[in-house]
Length: 393
Ligand code: APR
Image 1 (cartoon, helix red, strand yellow):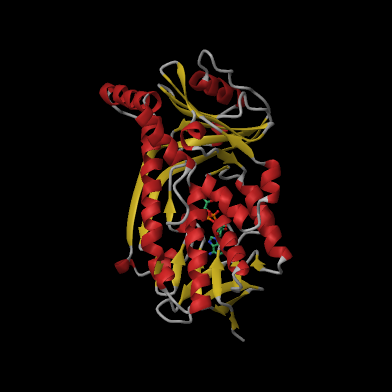
Image 2: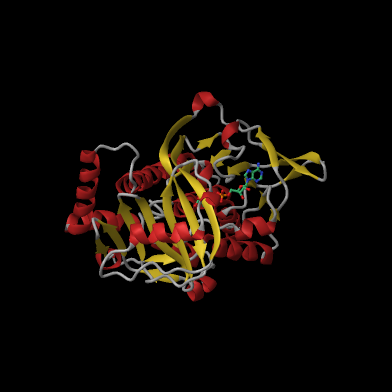
């Protein structure tokens, strides 16, 4: 027997879960498929910061209660280079703070809301392929109980991340891929220690980029630029702390605070966009559609901004039968996406030490930082992009 639903969603990351929740609020039925288990999805240590548009969206869809209790509000970024700290108060410039509320908390709020509403999120259920995208009856082929089964849908939402199967179902002849790989990675650590300040610090140092952030008042999240193929076990705790201090510590700022490191991992860095974001009855959102280097904290926010466009487009179709929102989704989403790409790529090139860069390039890089942090125009340009573009056009 073939099962049916209105919107079949592949992937239970923030994009897929938020879409399923917003569709439910609009009276649209969906089924979410996730190859990982609930524990894996709910505890992954990923992004941690929300733009004001993302906070407003979570409030609007009834997910503000725990966020209001647990979230921390950040007013400024402290840029450290040439031995000094340069504080950019983006809240004073734009009127908007940046909100620290980790991705695992958002995912757990979404999973709880889906469960309370009797929503269907099928864990341990990998999707093997999707087809029929040129028709009004696309099919998701998923694995369950040792066999491959079918779910017929009106539409499929590909929220299955960068390595997912949905994007691959679009014929190569209609797909254009834009991609940039960077010659470095990030060693990220989580440490059980209060950060020296509840602000985010970015260091652009001769030895490489470093960042000081946090996930909670007593949990620090720190990053170090490292070679792209480096391994976390090359880094002893002592080496991590001394390198963080070398890159981040400057006079007039509290020094890096050391504590037990409870997690460390290396991430490669890339920029990626696929165009278009839809094909027939398939719509891509989140990391399946675009990736940014993490400098600038845009990945999670972009995934949510996609859904802020896609969910109302589906809702309008089911309410009125009109397809304008769905037909315009790719173009509208790409406009915002490319602005986000611009900011993330600029921040990435501005703050990292590029292997082999000439003395001229390295000197100019710090001059660009001085302009961005020392002039009203430079600060405003940073502040507006960092706190985030509007979520809907
Ligand atoms: N079948 C079922 N599930 C799949 C399949 C498949 N074939 N392929 C991938 N998935 C699942 C993954 O296990 C993952 O849980 O899709 C989910 C995609 O989730 P994310 O990678 O978190 O992507 P997204 O929801 O787009 O969120 C993007 O979150 O972590 C950040 O850097 C990321 O900030 C960005 C944002």
